[in-house]
Amino acid sequence: MSSVPSRTRYEASCATRCASLEVDENLARETLIAAEKCEALTRRKGLYLAIHLGAGPGKASGKMGSGKKAKTATLATFAQDATARTGRSRPSIDRDVAQRDTLG
Image 1 (cartoon, rainbow, N blue to C red):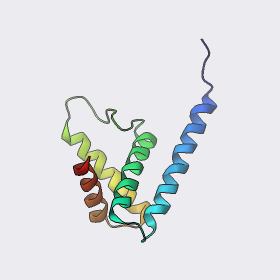
Image 2 (image 1 turned 30 degrees about the vertical axis):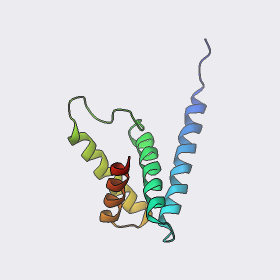
Image 3 (image 1 turned 180 degrees about the vertical axis):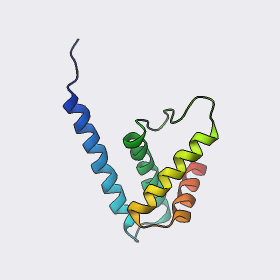
């Protein structure tokens, strides 16, 4: 049984942060169509969760039994971060995330 060096985890973290910066740059552009914004925000949300919560798509991000409350708190924090990093308005971020969640 071989152990995974901690450097690998660090490199993965760096790669995730770099990918997040790339998505932020794309979101800051005004030329994206609505579908592209939704896709980019979905990708950014997954990267945000991986960086800040150690979670990802399909993984628990709050305490068991907390249901929507934990999801709403995570979404609020994600939206605040996305607003600060992309320069887009909070209602715009919320709308695009909700639209993507509705479409699946």
